[in-house]
Amino acid sequence: MEDPWRLLGTPRFGGIFVVSDHASNHVPADIALGVDPALLDEHIAVDIGVREVGELMAQRAGIAAFQCTVSRLVCDVNREEHAPGVIPIASDGHAIPGNAIDHAGHLERLERFFHLYHRALGTVLDDCPPGLILSLHSFTPQLSSHPEEARPWQVGVLYNQDDRAARIAIPLLEAEGLMVGDQQPYSGQLLNYTMNRHAEAEGRPYLGVEVRQDQICHPQGQAIWAERLARIANRVAIELGC
Image (cartoon, rainbow, N blue to C red; front, side, top):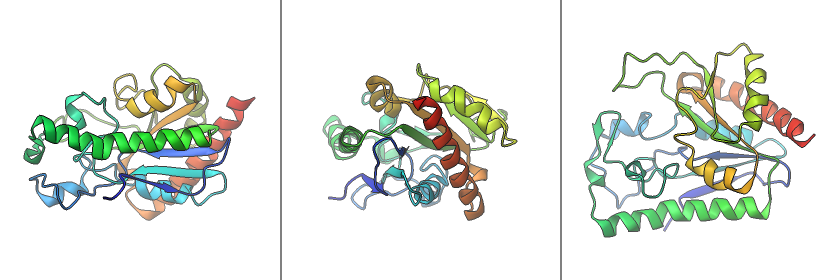
């Protein structure tokens, strides 16, 4: 059985470690979600552009990337274990009929994806503590279920209780000429499970970043953002270490 995660690059003590919970739209062959296959290329299934940005960042010295390798529609590893959305039956107005499974099936899905992912991530972080975890996500410019809500930010910075890295990163991103959302397009106090578990609970500094998907849906944008985030993450790590 395939692992629900992959590690890119070599983790370095005191380096940058990029974590992407929604980097893949892969659905294992033995799971039938019952959705239009075209939906697997949309934001409900994957954080568009994140896989490629993480790959580019992991080619740089001192940076490694850890990515989930199954779609968030199969199992959303950035949700609480007992939250309804961990195996969603609907997303942005689309029903996911294949996720209407019994309790035994639910527990099996969690063990196969959720628990294996988080155990592996915890082991890597324990074995080689980074100077900064970069939690990398992307967000859609417009939700189908709320078309009236504008999302003008090119990037958002999210956090829960620990805002040390956010306070450094926000002005650095703004200096790039970007419209930066502070706890936008949603609050990290609401959706921050992976960082709550592996960063805040352990006292590890982290930076939660959401890039708007139209910024990184093409190779040029992915290259720009990989360079930008590598440079800014290193600046943040250096300042945090002072």
